Amino acid sequence: MNAERVLVVDDEEHLRIVAQQTFELADIDVECCATADEALKRLKVGFDGVLVTDIRMPGMDGVALLEEAIAIDPELPVILVTGHGDVDLAVQCIKNGAYDFIEKPWQPERLVASVRRAAERRSLALENRALREQVHSGAAFEKTLFGRSELMRAQRQALSAIAATDVDVLITGDTGTGKEVAARLVHRKSSRSKGPFVHINCAALPDALIESELFGHEAGAFPGATRARYGKLEHARGGILCLDEVDLLPLALQAKLLDVLHNRTVTRLGSNDSLPLDIRVISLAKSNLAEAVNRGTFRADLLYRLNVASLHLPDLKDRREDIPGLFTVLAAKAAQQAGVGCPDIPTNVLNELSARDWPGNVRELRNQAERFVLGLPSGIGNRAEQAETLAEQINAYEKSLISAAISANGGRLKETYESLGLSRKSLYDKMQKHGLKRDDFGEDA
Image (tube, rainbow, N blue to C red; front, side, top):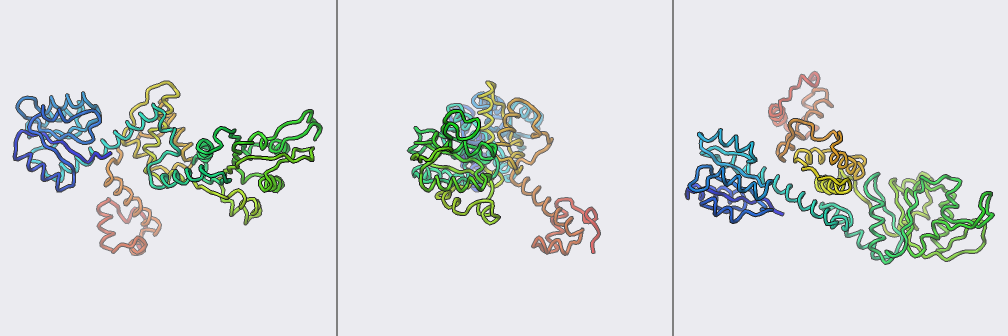
């Protein structure tokens, strides 16, 4: 969806020509209209661009066009071009929904910059709207793992390829990255989708019961076993057994599990008879199993057996571009479950969310979305001013890096500009640009 598009409305032909050339030089798609009526024919709900209109025009003026445009689509960015005498009117229009106003004679750089910011906001608004519609229809949750980044596209392709086979799978990833979601999606897309999906959290089972839970037992196998009981392995026949936190499985049980996976048979506790076992195993681990093998806490032969196919789910901080859309999907889903309307999510809130590291990953982001929808304190969107443009965010990041480097070097500028790969003059220029003073960080050697 491309919002780098602008519709210009001005009754003066020479100004339309200048605007046309200005936007074409900036590589922005542009269309010009001489009247408001002509522009309204092109404006529809979901118009993927920005409206720039003069205020003073014969017939329908820019103020009336603003009202009509916002009535068509309240999220459409409208930039007003005004003479000096209309500034007060333009300010009032801002309060009524206009995005910005530009005074005549306008500077090309100022006009292009305003349109780009408005286009960025428009693109985000349209994307959020599409995501909300997908959530309402259920389509977004029929997909595999959400994400528009190249990283997640690759994960979905790998997931699809894995689901088409019948080999055992190892899915790794940090807490909250969606390992169980991925496992259930493999089940749903595999040839075993009509069979059971049996999930076992290896860390949650008591040591005294875990063997019985997995393998089952015959009556009298141990005190209290008054009747025979199927184990989880048998329950998973014809389907998928999901071993969550398999890295925490006791070593003694790892050997028995290896035997089960090798022979595809299971023997209940207290029995000598082996039962055939038609299962597919998906193992989930948040730690590096290769390192666990080196530590002696995980069997190498079991790792080789589990890791026929593998998938690693990345942290949110490694795919920040997915965070705004994912938060929108989660908020819409939370609103749907709570039976309330999903509130609008301001751009500054989405920018703030993208800047966070999210150690709890998708699970933590989901909790934040639920609090946001329910109006509970969430700690987001509280800053009075928030960098909304890419340039502002880059400047803020550059300032933080330089500040950290000066502080780390105790205010010694020579070591600072060498560590940053800058010349002395470049560092001085950037410090002046960001209002940084050496004395604030320590004495210069």
